[in-house]
Every structure is written in C-alpha cells, then in structure tokens.
Image (cartoon, rainbow, N blue to C red; front, side):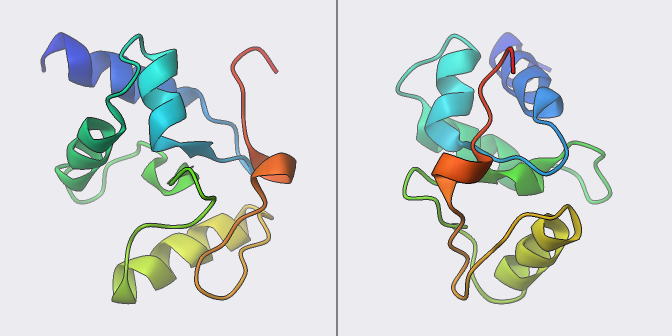
Length: 102
C-alpha cells in the first residue's frame, strides 16, 4: 500500500462510531489538502468485507455520494450508528461532523 492510501485509511479508521467526516476533511487531516476526489477513488477500491468504516465518509454538502443500492446500504449503516440520515442521504454536518482530537 502506498503512503497516500495508508494515511487516508489511518484517518478514516479514527472516525468514531456515530460520527461522519467529509472526503475533503479526510484529505486535509491526512496531509493532502485538495485531494477529496482521490479519497473517494480510494474508497471505491476497498475490498469487499473491509473493516474500514467507509460509510462514515460523505461529501462536503453533508450528503452521501453513492446512489441506488449503495446509497441505501450506507444510509442503513449510518442509521444503525444513530446518525440521522434524511431521505436522499442528507446528514446534518453541524451535529455529526467529526474533528480529530474530539
């Protein structure tokens, strides 16, 4: 695994149960500001059954970026953790957004 992926996955692994972060935040916290799209690309390549809490990463508008069955799966995972996900995948970032050190 290259250094970029290692840093990205290390940050995602820290997102607590019941909280979310954005692709851009993950990139910034990992030392790669401006690399939000690359964070999304890295998550798309996760192997099936990965233990990384990928479902806790959403876009900067507070929405789940996935569609169809994947949207439903991510919504269900977040709701199971107590995150209020509105229809269409909207999450209140002010309430659920994680910052390192919290």
